[in-house]
Image (cartoon, rainbow, N blue to C red):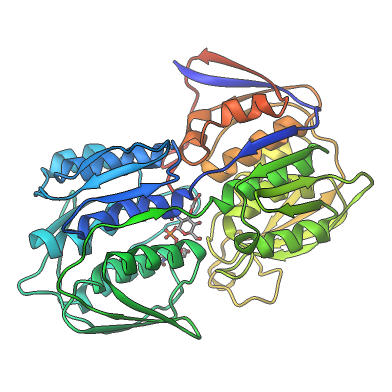
Length: 452
Ligand code: EPU
């Protein structure tokens, strides 16, 4: 049996919810604890499934992970790091991409790492070629096997000069987590500079690393011989904050997101305002609301930071179905992130997806025939429907659509949303949503669904 969420839509979401630490930072900071000789304390950790997956993986490698005294605090003690059994790693990893980031820390600590097959994903291929190439340049030996990849280091890894073909978040984190304990200096060009990466740099600096973030996407890391544990409060989840902002807009409501941080959301807030949404920032969070009247259509391109995040795109598209005129969204980060619009079209939205680049941002997908641009014509009323959640962000956007639609929707595969949205059932109730949780026989959830 699986849980189905029955949503009676057409009600404006109204109230206050809070967001905690960013899942896309917390999971990496947890991995960083492996590099320390002493325990780390990570605060503001959300109760999302990604955190449980990383906890399980760390425990398999001998890290003692337990709750700290403060609510949302984790204590991670890596004193007894050990080699884990390949089949155990495989079983724990599920469809998570986090295991790839264990490479550098494990090679430094144990001289070897095993990474299970990370599989495919519904938002694109998500290859790991940048990660493996970087590891090779540090002097690691990468041995691809049937079940996964074994990484070994005949000698201590050494610093190197690297330039990423694309400013990949994961590959930048890979380089950081590996370079901090490598011998000598590493220079990374065309690095990703997302706020979650800057927070990871802050964690590593607390541990004893020497890292400078230079202009034009250059990161320089001077390797050190020893790192210790850290005490750190995770930055708030800007994807979750923006998702609730989009939900407020699409349902004609008003949501105060406690914990939302303006500086990490500036590009989202600009776009939100251009669409016709209103917001107000105070010391503790951001209030998002629909001020009445018609929303405006926009042209939008997703991009690496400081551009408009790919993860903000899917929830906002639902609000764009209610904007007057034609909105254009050009997705330049993932080649296949519009699969979720089929369900919106089934609910009454008018959305067409194109293979051409509908925007000026240079993009890797136009020449390669990927359906990566969307034109949304609005406003169109949405009707309730039976929906199967395809992936984390697409799933949340389906949920928003169900909340905005007239009539009843049954949302299947809802557990995928737990992976990145903490206690969202309670938050929906706090915002006055009319929802009912029921058990039902599972329906087809796409292969690879839920991967982050
Ligand atoms: N890429 C490669 N080769 C690589 C690595 C990446 O070609 O070796 C490509 C990817 O295929 C993609 C692009 O580079 O087209 C960007 O991927 P990136 O490495 O930046 O993404 P990621 O590290 O795998 C993280 C988040 C994603 C978020 C992206 C972009 C985590 C666990 N995941 O993924 O979050 O969309 O950065 O900001 O941090 C989510 O939270 O729902 C989610 C998907």
